[in-house]
Amino acid sequence: MPDTSSPGGPRVCVIGAGACGLAAAQVLKERGIPFDVYEHGSDLGGQWRFGNDSGTSAVYDSIELNSSSVMSGFPKLPMPASYPTFPGHAQMLDYLERYAGHFGLRPHIRFRTRVVGVHPAAGGGYDVSTAGGGPEVTRHYDAVVVASGFHWDPKPTPTVRGQFSGRQLHSKEYKTPEGMEGRRVLVVGFGNTACDVATELSGIAERVVMSVRRGFWVTPKLYGSRPLDRFNPFLARYVPMALQSVLLTAMLWAKQGSLARYGLPDPDHLVLRTHPATCEGFLPAVRAGRIAVRPAVERFDGDRVSFADGTAEEFDTILWCTGFRFSFPFLPPSLTPVMTGPMRLFRRIVMPGRPGLYFLGFVKPLSAITVQAEAQAEWIADLIDGTTVLPGPDDLAAEIAADERRVRRRYTATPRLTVEIDWYRYLKQLARDRRRLAAPAGIRSETVMEVAAV
Image (cartoon, rainbow, N blue to C red):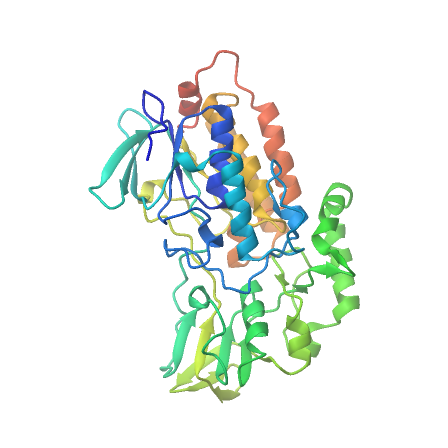
């Protein structure tokens, strides 16, 4: 492919050509900052390229966005009006390809090239090693933007006493319901994927049982005929978050009643205290008896599964919808962020003491991530080109600690706590940073990066 770097060598390395990597590429190109994007797969799209040959896509064929098309595009290029209200993976991939074409990003992407190592360079910046059909190559960059995502490395299967003799698979391996006809399937988990897959399988399997350890709210995608997320901007701007939680909790109680009526555990928290499960057909399928609900799995005995309530059933297949772990196989421990509890990164982007290393897209808003990804990319570009500077070491540490306290007060303690954000507050904070942290006139970008070294 053509070399798109500057004569002095490319300055920025972007890891991943999914939605977040493309957002970084668009902003860097717009600013005139030289960069390269490295993508393990043979084409762009990341998660949204169904069956991606990079091995990182976890989407199944029937998946739909939980956010509406109007709210799911990047601010600089809205989704086409011809898309369905809740686009599937085919429309999302088409949109990302349109986005890359519109902004001329493809020439900057090195496909079939895997980043295998990122190490601090002696003179500053980072040495990035890549592999892709030939000898390993190492190039020097002033900055690295990690946009590799966090829905690709399945968590290990939970430890359960005994042995199960049937088929077990993680939700990442599930693509279509083909082969599940007439089977007895146990779905473990209670997130979006678990609800989607259980609902889909309930139409063809002999029996579908869902194992649920704790209660979460189940929210619809529509309020009447209007996508529920269309109310988000108004609520975020004019209604305090505590009142939003109370109002939405009351609305769901009025619409659904207690989840105990469906055999599900009632949540021990208000709506918005953690991510809800969003699935239109799930509760009707449970109410109709097409999906049965059981508590946690306690023991295996051949094809027989025992549950915490003392019941037991025989199953052919167990589908583990137990989530993903944060993985950065190309980073040494010294560059790997702590990903338990609230993320200890300034603005969820910058690791103290590691100038020029940025993490983009490691947030989980209730809205689509595209808006946050573009805002993060602009914020990062401001630091790279010297438009803004980071706070001093003491202020940086204080801001991270204050953010952690806010997150622990705001959200229920679940594994999702690491990436949870209040999307509107977060966007406002990034915008304030870009104004408040403006760099002194004439400061060089090299000096800006050094400010982060604490």
